[in-house]
Length: 264
Length: 166
Image 1: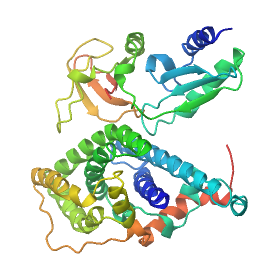
Image 2 (image 1 turned 90 degrees about the vertical axis):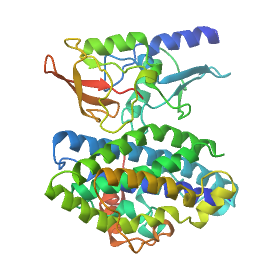
Image 3 (image 1 turned 180 degrees about the vertical axis):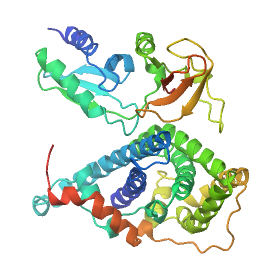
Image 4 (image 1 turned 60 degrees about the horizontal axis):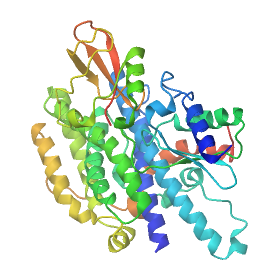
């Protein structure tokens, strides 16, 4: 039971960390100053959410390690938010593939954010009503921030889709490239199924309809059309990642691994 | 000192602990101190809550509180961060709102009349902290810190920060 809760919490944390890191790659490179600030603010929110989830996961893991077979575990270092973010390898990460996709151009980044924020909003609305107090508190706190992310990214999808010929063609390209990564959100992993049974997390399959409704609303305002017959990729939730995640981790973890335990 | 006296003294000290990003505000003005406790062994515990999940000032704020209390003779200080109930700008003190305004940052509107989430919303009526005009527009939802948005006054043309209602 605890193992499922730990994995589920890590899944939520990894989604937020990896997308937060991807967005942070825009720092200093945004198309205009205000939007550079916007995307990095969103990064900050996501990395903050990730920290809250990692702290919770590490607390459960330390408790488990203490109670089980203490002599064998004595040698193990305490788990912390940092050890979870910096010292796990790619197959240990449980984020969906969507969030690790490269930033591409502004259109790709915007659309990826919109798909994720629309999903995260629906998910956290349910999570906050769930039976796990800490997950509920983290979700409730994050929802206010996600509301901004969703509005901001929706506006940009519309602005670019219904914009110039150039922005429109870029949005269409982004849609073709990213659509196939949206299906994974709604296919529950074993851990997610266990959380449904415990009344902690929602059935992600049931979020799909509302998500599609939101996406159709925004895309139609943006005069964009959902691709048909797209093959849906999945596997991120169980650690089968693209090479993109290794690239992210090699940067994200390099300092911590070069100087383990360093303080500043 | 009795517990009540200690608690009152701590609240008094916290009045002078500044927010590192908006130094005109104290941690009490912001409404992020949720409780002050004295345990049976006499050690104080301060319960704080972050404004935003990723607020980078939280560590600094915790250090600021610890240092201020140590300077006033308190020992074994515990600072605990809680997430629930989630912080709201409705917890900001009236005094804090006034200080923000004087500092050149528009204070948050009350939640009931603001927080409009419509797309491209003709945003809230935010008053320019310089010339007091309501003829202002939102330049960006995100400003120089997580808690602020960027506005411009269409009368005096000055750009300014607005502390978002949250």
